[in-house]
Length: 156
Image (cartoon, rainbow, N blue to C red; front, side, top):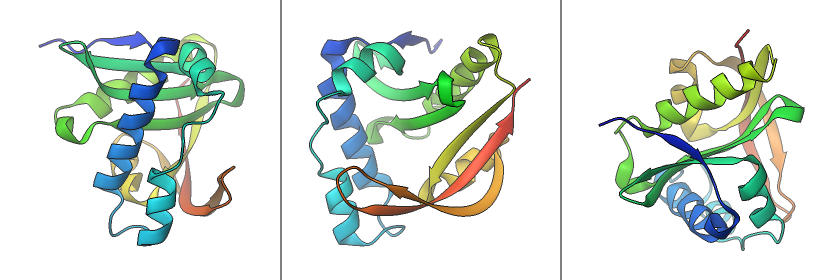
């Protein structure tokens, strides 16, 4: 089976947001405090997310259902989000999405990419060539702060 990455559509924003919330609940247990995780995974979709989906999000579909997505901000040289549906963990969707985002960034002339890895995802990103050990704080617009690891990768 060939996995294909496609541009997301604005009308898919809610499905993408729900995938994000489900992935957080499944993957972040044990890495973050239960109350923090509940606030993070239970947050409402921001108003601007439809536009974000249309402009910066790419998806992988399996039988028409979105199973992974990545949010690439070329102007910041940054992968802002990447999630895989819990039902699709371990099937190569994460690696495929990451390779795709790296290729898009490289085609746009970027020489490196940065990301803030959630604590549960650090090992995955290291296995994919990202480096970094600096702890950082992600300040959510919803008022909570998440520990993460600042990582980067040379792509050019």
